[in-house]
Image (cartoon, rainbow, N blue to C red):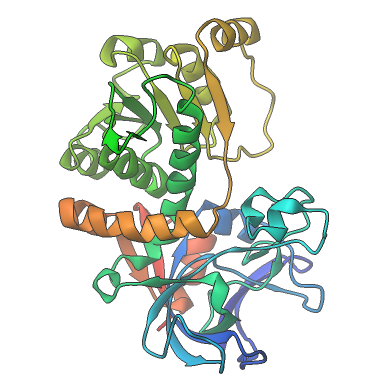
Length: 370
């Protein structure tokens, strides 16, 4: 069967004939892959910055943002059946008994670092025609979300981040979401850094959660990304018109910064304007670049005197995936055009070179496998 693979030793990215998998265990599920999203991680692996193939292979099949259709199930599978749509989770637990996170099926908090990740680290990914995985690693998706289901995995980044933000803000006397069966609210404002797919999905997540939402990005103020932001009731702040120093004047107290750029210089500049009791959430991973100058004294002073918190988050567990499926349905109900507008191109597998090694404009490109 066809698969898109990276050969690190020969520095090649090409379409290969990959063995079609079969069911080996009672809880196995075989999927026909439908859509696989292309993101910055895939492009970085295709640029040979990182990415590790399985031990028995000289190549790594790419792809971790995926939507599949079940075609066959093992005898002990009970949650899905042939014809169901599913989203496969990415990370698999490490083997160490001492890792309490992995033993609790929360490999997104793995202590050892010896986890595997489909399409990234020591496990083949989903840019191929058929995939077999265990039932516990699959998240059912309603048929009504078929057209946008590939967005679930990038949305899990925001879902996991928000869950942790709410946990942190329970420290505030008024900060809990539900207290004594009643919703207690206070003024929330969220600043999203970046208007890529992760940033825009994050903006939808915080807007749906009740935050007054702002998106700060370098795109033009009248471009398609700005229009998506405006269509969900948020405000787009273009870096072509607005400086970081202007943000406190435009936003009355920044309670949450959701970072989706991987731009360290920008992040530490914005950290200076985080509001009292605020949380700064990092989701991007900067490349190895030259050091940047940081006003560490001011940042540390604010962290202490303003009761601020910094949070880094990566990958996601089952709860975040299930929340992403639920909230994607909410987004489609509230902002159907905006959600559909995130997917700006669908391509055949043969176009992988343009997507992974070239430059295709747009927000989210998707490879249509099936």
